[in-house]
Each structure stands twice: as structure tokens, then as C-alpha cells.
Length: 163
Image (tube, rainbow, N blue to C red; front, side):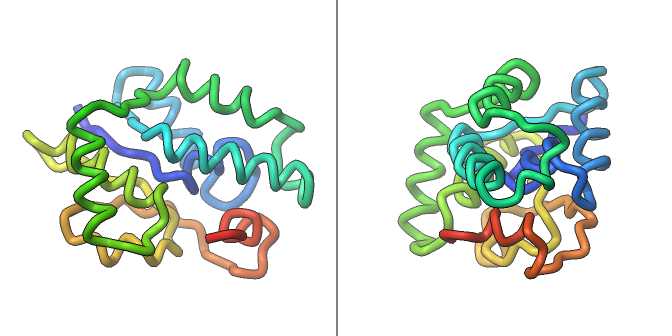
């Protein structure tokens, strides 16, 4: 079965109508049907909590409906495979030591991908505007959501604020 790791951006798209959101939702539907497996690291969920909170304050029109960040996190735990184990933490520590200045969310998704790739490469699903992943050489495969990045969009301002 094909396995993927969601970075924070694609996970956030699940709560919006932005470009790429239908693709992200389709991936989750396939996960729920058992056609693929989607994993996410708790650090990415923490990052998503912060961004959803910011969106609720600054650009509520981006959300499908007004949703509390904690409800989104609970839904992720109920639906996706959330993993943070000893092997993942060791990989995350190695990456953080090597790639200083890289956001924790990007490193967390990468560490989870590396940990899951012991038998077969596991792709990280990222937005097409992610610049930090280029540096992380240990991850071999990425699946890009066709997002048509626009740095001026309210969604991207909320995601990138504070990075």
C-alpha cells in the first residue's frame, strides 16, 4: 500500500477552499477507504493549530466553516496515522542538528518520512512553494500539491507568518 506523510500545509488545506484543498481531501478519502495511508507528525499538528488560530483571527473567509483548532487536531488523531516514536525522535534530532534554521514542521515531516522509509520510500506531501525541503537530502521523494503559490494570498500570509 502506498504511504505518504502530510506536511502542515496540505493538512491545513483540508479546512479551506484554497487551490489544492480538493486534492488533499481526496487523499484523506483514499486513506479512509484503505487505498493509501497518510501519516503526520504531532509537531505538524501543533503548527497547524497555530495557523488555524491565526486564520480565525485574520482571515476567517479562508475556512470552510468556523472551526476550533483543537477540533481539527482531534479529527487528525481520529482519522490519520499520527506517529511520534523513539525512532522518529532520533531522526528528528539528527535533522535538527544538521539543518539549523529549518522549521520544526518541515524537519518533523522529514523525520517521519525517513523513519517510515526503512522498506520502501515514503513521500512527503508538500505544497509546491516549500523552499526548506530542498535542503533535506535524506528525504528522497516528495509529492507536490498543485497549489499555484501566490505569496500575497491571505492563506500564504497566515501560513508563512512567523517562519
